[in-house]
Image 1 (cartoon, rainbow, N blue to C red):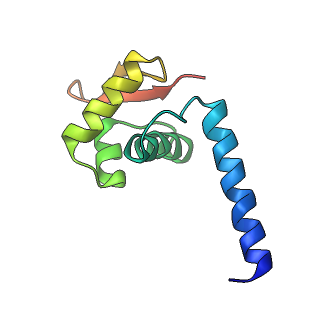
Image 2 (tube, rainbow, N blue to C red):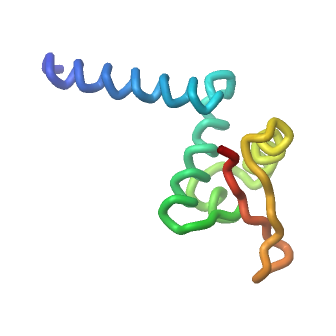
Length: 96
């Protein structure tokens, strides 16, 4: 690995660690973090995100995604709002 590549990688990892600390994500496991980042990415790119979006994008099972979303909701990292278009779906809103 080149020295520049290694320095760039270390800088990126330090930035990610800082972001995770700011968002209070440090205590979550890698699966939970990936689900959180999937929600953030989908919300920013599509304007909204529902549970099916997270399942399809993350590759995790419905059960894993649902349990993690419920955990995030109970810890006030996100909120759920019932979809106006499909009453069976919930829109995920990250809390700031």
